Amino acid sequence: RTVLVTKFVMSGSVTRAPALVCDRGELSTGIVHFGVGGFHRSHQQAYLDELLRVDFENTKSWCYTGLGVLSFDTKMRDYLVANKFTYPVVSRIGETPETMAMHVHHVVTLRDMLLSFENPAAAVRLLSSPDVKIVSLTITEFGYRVPINEGDRTLVKLALDGAVDGVHNDEATPAECAGATVFGILLAALANRKRHGLRPFTIMSCDNLPHNGEVAKRRVLGAAADLDLDPATQQWLETEAKYPSTMVDRITPATSNEDIVSLKENADITDAWPVMCEPYKHWVIEDDFVDCARPAWETVGALLVPDVRPHELMKVRLLNVGHSAMCYAGVLAGCEHVHEAVTHKMIKPFLKRLMREEIAASLVADPSMEALVCGLDQYAELVLSRFKNVAVKDTLDRIAMDGSEKFRVQGRAVVMEGLAADRTVRGFALYVAAWAHFLRKAVMEGSVVRDASASLIVAPWADVAGVGPVESAVTATEYAVPARLPPQTAEDAAALQRFLDIEEVFGVLAQHEGWRQAVVREFEDIATSGVEATLLGYIFGVGHNSNGDLAQLGSNGARLSERVSGTFILDEVCAHEDAAAAPDITDEAVAFVSLY
Image 1 (cartoon, rainbow, N blue to C red):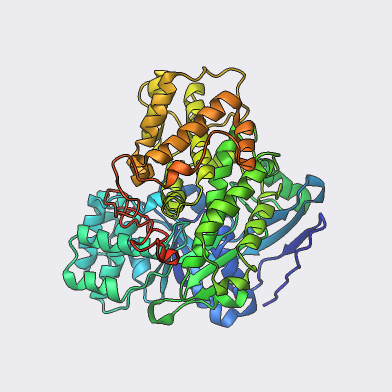
Image 2 (cartoon, rainbow, N blue to C red):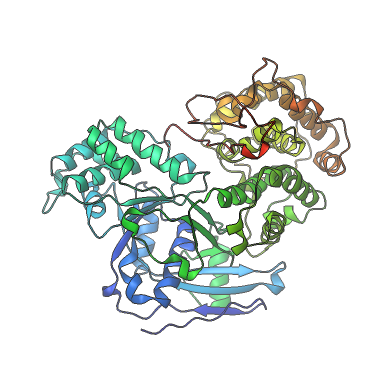
């Protein structure tokens, strides 16, 4: 085996780490991954490939097989087959095109990829193999809410009856099994493993969700109950399977045709679907695996810790929430890319103040973070410097996708904690007001809003525009503010109220009058003075939007610390009942779903 690694240098150069030269027949599958997309290929695969280069013997049995459940996964499978399951990870950095540096890392740790809808029984057999110790997931927030279906029920019954084992006539598998979901397939395999006396595998979520291990566990247990698995199996899943939380980070935009051409021109590499990303990557993993079986990821820079929560909150709130807060104002200001927005004369200071006064104030630094940065302020500066990377070319359109889910899961808890602690949340009110203008603009222009809840969040503005049902309305691809949008009307004010009424997105904030009034004021400021003037008012703390009323109770007297039950929330607590006496025990909110 030959290991050739070229160190990445920031000089406008092109460097390269060629594929590891080895007998790939020695590689075997220890991890199966659902959701083989750009992020998985740039992050988890990159870590394992680096580990394979430095510790081949102990890593060769931990390679990946991908498993796709959606029709568009066919394109990825076909690309990987044509590439013989190798591909380049292209990391680029530079604040100007002239200083951009590129490093190409060729990955070999993805051995195969199956499509469950082509052969559901084969998918269950793969996951039932005793060699598979970990199943990892990047299925997005939405993936944990897909309901169990009849295909799942049939597939689980086949597994329990032993009808997917050994030499099986896969063509005889009932047709409905082709529609089996991620968690139906997982549970069919786990039931099959238990039937054979095997240990369960570890289920490791790598999605950008708070407490993603707990989210995965609750989804598995909820789906097991929906599938009527016997009590002993449900207990086995709860006590013997493991669900470590993770914090993952590497900005990985979609690959464009321009990226493919650039790779050929600058590195003389022809590839149909390279992964484009930033050089920076970060992975924090809760060290909780079935029988302690896992690769030695810490050897190549991953951080294994007993508690991921401080790290995930730092990353999700400062980076992901910061991304969302920036993107809508950026679109309204005429920006197209993240690096344009973060260097905008008004958006940059807005974002810095929001991160410092409203987001960082909700976080507590953990000693284990020192392995990465010295404190939250330094991490915030690191985030801003990464946003400036022109090479990433991340679009605001991409960041704006699934805004309802992102606010519900990532941003809402920060607002609730801030209100409960009597901290300013004016920046968040401006964020939501800009989002509302973004939605209004999209509807008025006839653009599409790419959001799993598009019909819900666009409906208030569709009513104003008179466009009727909004199934077809989904991505604002026109970034420059048009010369003439219809002027604000009383109907727009009513539409904003209907928008703020959406409890699936805003939770108890929908009943908090002070919060609602704050959003209304920022919305009106944007309408009358423009987004830049509104941002300026926030930056210097001027304007008519005071935070004084935000600490008050909602109009119905409801406390923000009350527990909320509903379709989308398992457990949401913004502050302990004794928070006034002990503010350090605030619960950051276990916000999530009825099992996506």
